[in-house]
Length: 81
Image (cartoon, rainbow, N blue to C red; front, side, top):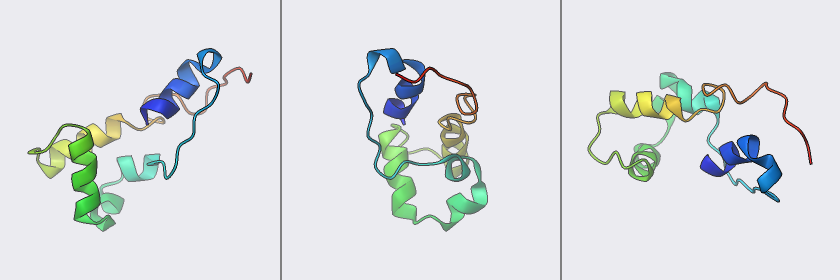
């Protein structure tokens, strides 16, 4: 997600960004979808965020912050190189 965010914000400084299996807004934002994801996958996300011992509610709040839509980056026009 950091690389994708940089692709939006610093496109003039990057030659390209590849993102395989990106996490999308609906998963980061929707508790119902998060409930259908395997527990191991949520553990991986928590681990990558440094939230090993966080509660499920704390993890949901943090995941929402990583959504590019929540950050206001999607829907804006950016110059295309």
